[in-house]
Image (cartoon, rainbow, N blue to C red; front, side):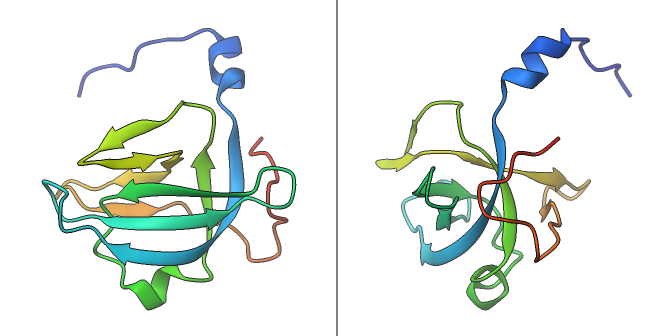
Length: 114
């Protein structure tokens, strides 16, 4: 296993990771790999944002209402004609599937990750 690149702590601090709640999930047939379009509410100060995520190992029912972590300041990215506004964070497994980071349901929307 290769060693990770060492970064300055200020680079890590610059990434805004926040708690959100999944509001809606849509099928994304235009994506090259199976993916969902996911709308997440990051609270009143940050609002609702959309992303595309390859987390089809979760059903729509498993995602809606779930607390998640998103990196919200990486800029927008166009994916198969869809504008993704944040990066949904999860752990990539050896088979390529993604397991979403678990957030306590009592975590307030928009809370920064420390």
